[in-house]
Every structure is written in C-alpha cells, then in structure tokens.
Image (cartoon, rainbow, N blue to C red; front, side, top):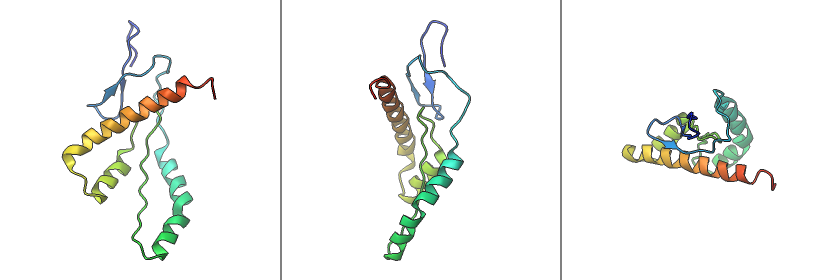
Length: 116
C-alpha cells in the first residue's frame, strides 16, 4: 500500500506479515493463477512420481505455490505441514519467513533487471 508521503508497505496474505517493498512496483488487484500452476506442475512431475512409486517408495506430490510478490497459496503449504507433522505454533512464523524471503529475492532480481 503506497502512502501519500512516499512511504510504502506491502501486506502478504498473512495479516501478521508486513514487509517493505520498493515503491517502483505498481500495486495490483491481480492474483497469481495457482490452480493453473498446480495443474501444470502435477502434469510435469507425474512421470517422476510414478517412477518413484514403481521403485517401491511412498511418494506424494505437494505443490507449494508462492507468487513473486509474496502471496502464498496456503492450501499446498498447509498440506505440506500436515504431511510432515509440522508444529502448529511454528507454521505462522515459517509462512512469514517465506514471504519475506520471496519478496527480498524478487527485489534483488528487480535490481538486476537491466544487467541481465
């Protein structure tokens, strides 16, 4: 959210996680197509999953989708937390850490946009 005085703040889909982001980014109401992305990822890795299962291993594909602006598709992440029995009280902190990391590295890429 851009402020009239030029300050800025970005809010991810987690209310407890706010992170600073460069003002040159234009805010949008558009959201990533996580459903389409999950379908493409599932199709892309289906042969690999089948090969692993044929070797006798238990294999489950879980797509964790994170947009470049820090939006997390919590369905996949929550599914992952359940499968690995991740402690509930740490989940929120992990999601905040993911949001901050994604935004930090997206900003690093943006800074190098003219050097690539």
